[in-house]
Amino acid sequence: MSRRDFLRASAVVGASAALPKSVIAQSTDRKVFRWAFLTAETGFDPAQISDLYSRTVCRNIFDALLMYDYLARPVKLKPNVATTMPEVSSDFRRYTFRLKCNIFFADDAAFKGAQRELVAEDFAYSFKRHFDPRWKSPSYATLEAAEIVGIDEVRKEALKTGRFDYDRPIEGLRALDRYTFQLVLGKPNPRFIYQLADNAFLGAVAREVVDMYGDQIMAHPVGTGPFKLGDWRRSSRIVLDRNPTYRDEFYDAEPAANDVRSQTIFAAMKGRKLPMIDRVEIAVIDESQPRWLAFLNEEHDMIEAVPPDFIRVAIPQNRLAPSLAKRGIQMDRIALPEIVVSYFNMEDPVVGGFAAERVALRRAISLAYNQDLEINLIRKGQMVPASSPVGPQTFGYDPSFLTDAATYDLARAKALLDTYGYTDRNGDGWREQPDGSQLVLEYATQSDPLSKQYNELWKKGMDDLGIRITFSYGKWPEQLKSSRAGKLMMWGVAWVATVPDCETFLDMGHSRFKGLANRARFDMRRYDELHERQRALPDSEERLSIVREMKRYFAAFMPYKLHGHRFRTDLTHRWLIGYRRHPFSPHVFKYVDIDTSLQPTRRG
Image 1 (spheres, rainbow, N blue to C red):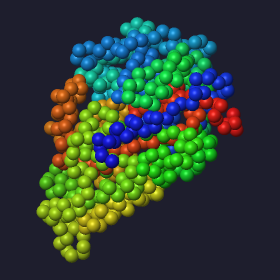
Image 2: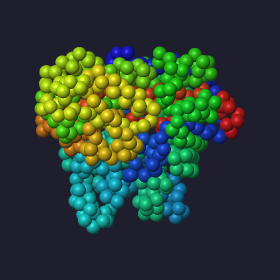
Image 3: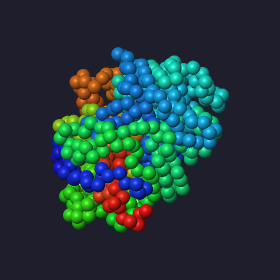
Image 4: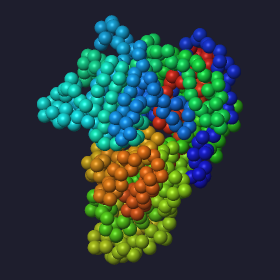
């Protein structure tokens, strides 16, 4: 599949699928949506979480100022708890929001029996929590880069005293009145507005709740969203119940005129009160076979991301299997806004640095890795090669931008190494470094079956090239810790955009983000300068030109071996109505319905 076909395919899959006629009927039966997470959650406090699954839960409990239109593609922002889109200053530094009245937090003991209204100060407080050292917010770097005016002084004082002063006035985070919230940044940031739609990151939290639960706040999420936490058995089961205090909100969207499936969903759902389901029950099943069988046996309403082991069975040639189609099962498929890479530690004495021979070594390693085998055999066709780190569905993604980042060319790889002095000097069959010292690569990995398949591919490629490669095994959290500290020579990771912009990917080369987005620890002044320039510009041809130049730095110096951009295919049973995966706000449960007349009677 070509890169040009990549986005087109993800947009049209399942477009002809119609909704059951019974969707319009309002069933009085209790509607329960059941599915499974692939990995365990960590907790439900926006200031402390970063993992996908905790964020999924929080996305349904908390409210952000803005939200994404559920069906609009390309994606579109619209007001959520704000009355309108914000007033934005001409220099993109000041954002002013007016909140809707009569939006209330879910009932909780922290409010002592009172009904607690959402007010502007709640957003100021929620922002501040990410700067409080107590919470060790993994999202702190994102907000720090925005340079919110006045917040650094408060954080520095907290680092000295051990106490963050939430009552100290901060120019950049102000409640101008009960319902007006103003955010002021230290420098222009035209795309910061996207962060304000992330309710798993900047959803409003009430100070009384945090004060009451303290260090146990991860287990006591209280928001203004459509659901509340009903039950939680860590790493096993999560239950969300409809929030009875949720405001009157009705289904509205702006699907593209040529998006048949979204148009069909909208026609059936328009004007319906949200949420439409009563309960969400989530199991944690990390093994693919029991997760797949639970879906086939109709114990779950959906399976998120068809497991690689069952791709050929479920979606041969990327089409829904006839046996599943006969059961009314539907597929929803998108191109993920992400990049899969293997990075080279640019500070490593073997593979790092900017000397010509080191660049040649990294390029040769990349050329000797057979990307086609990875895509066809291991990933079962669920990825396309990447020519730049910028992922689909983001500003700056260009399928016509071509490099050899994902090219397999063993002869060229060998010629590069020969030219730059990486030859077999002692006749043992393995190449040495130009100075005659031993050349050994060390690739960090995990011990799961899928990782072992990638390791075998790496081993074959390097054996063919004449380079020794060893594998350093460890659990993912351990490897992550070592990666952040710059202790790994090479490791494979994926980087996902949470907003429809390329800056997430460009951060992979900025020296400020070493150990974070910049796993390769790439450090070049010119690149950093370009990064700062594009960051201050609105989306335009000028910015796009700078982004293209930045992409060329990745191609020229090869801090990353680019693997590709993945598809994500979800399958749903016929009674789950209205599901569409949103690329930047997936699994918002208020938009789906359950047709209990089609659901197995044993589901109850």
